[in-house]
Amino acid sequence: MKFPRTMKIYAIVLSVSLCLLNQALASDDKLDKSGRIIGMGGAFTGLANSSYAIFYNPAGLALMPFREASAFVAQPYGLSELLHVTVSYADPLSLPENLGAFGIAARRFGFQLYNETAFSIAYANSFERKFFYGGTLRYHNTSIQNYGSAGAFGIDIGVLFLVTPELSIGFSATNLNRPTIGISNEVLAQIYTAGVSYRLLKNLRAVVDLEKDVRFPLTVKSGVEFDAVQYLSLRAGFSTEPQRLTGGVGIHYALADIDYAVTTHPDLGLSHQLSLTIRFGGATPDNPQADLDRVIDEAFDIKPPIAEGEKININTAGVQDFIRLPKINRALAERIVRYRQEYGKFESIDDVKKVRGLSEMIFRQIEKFLSIDEK
Image 1 (cartoon, one colour):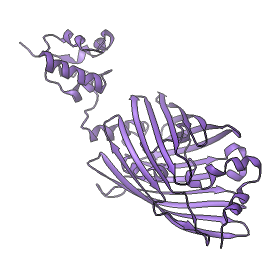
Image 2 (cartoon, helix red, strand yellow; image 1 turned 120 degrees about the vertical axis):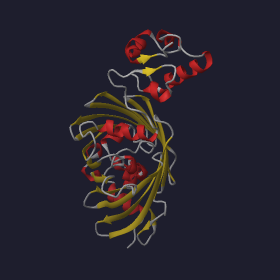
Image 3 (cartoon, rainbow, N blue to C red; image 1 turned 60 degrees about the vertical axis):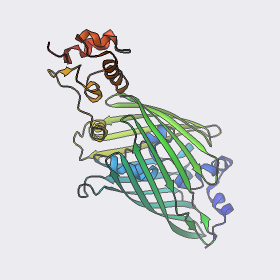
């Protein structure tokens, strides 16, 4: 069977509009597969904390503290010929302790005349709970009506490193083995991506991906996610090649998330995407972010938030102790410790207000948790 590239394009292109999408949709490996991720501009390699890590960075599966099943559907620009459906499942709990996590996924893109189908199985593990690594084996099948079908196996790999509790970086390679399909040996999309995720505030995160498909120019994807309240997240993003703005909303209730995203295209207008995620097996099923935070805290030996009635001695406490206080982030905790090292022990609790950035408002919120050496 032979797959001339022009025939592949003709099968997809039913209008001039579809011609404009050829670069982005030449392979469904380049298609985003989650309402949440699309809302953040498609950047996820440095975060990778859901079952969609199977597609973006399989290393992230080992970071998850709960099982998760997800489904995604999109019909870009209202064109049924571009229907894209994805289902995935991640399980970090079933394997024996320290043997990692696994995931499975399936996706389909296209319509009767032309479609692409893929089935994936992924595995991930970690070293010292800060360095994560994983891989995906995927079978990809392309079918063109009246021309037949052909398949190939692709291998993806990924790594994820927790640099600090706020910062993580990741790298992934898609179709690392450079698989070819059909008698014409058409090469499937080979993509290398580096990503960064940084938690600016407890409820605000920024993500950036640099994605290089060997056939096309470098793509930059970036976005932010703001947890407005426990049950609602707001997202915005931007990406290049082609340029597009994205936005999205996530609704979290009990065990489920519903994520909606909208994207803009300079020529084709708006496109809508929707995904559903269900979690089970976590320590706090109604608050998955708390479970994810606990994984980070354990990796960096961060203690839980201070309890009512508990006291911290400001002359002996370390950075991790001060972080337990409300409104005290790592930077401010480090300044408190550094001030004490430079100027000696605090003589009174009020002296902590001399530390740059520790305002009167913050002091009033933490005062009841502070103690000092007895003379």
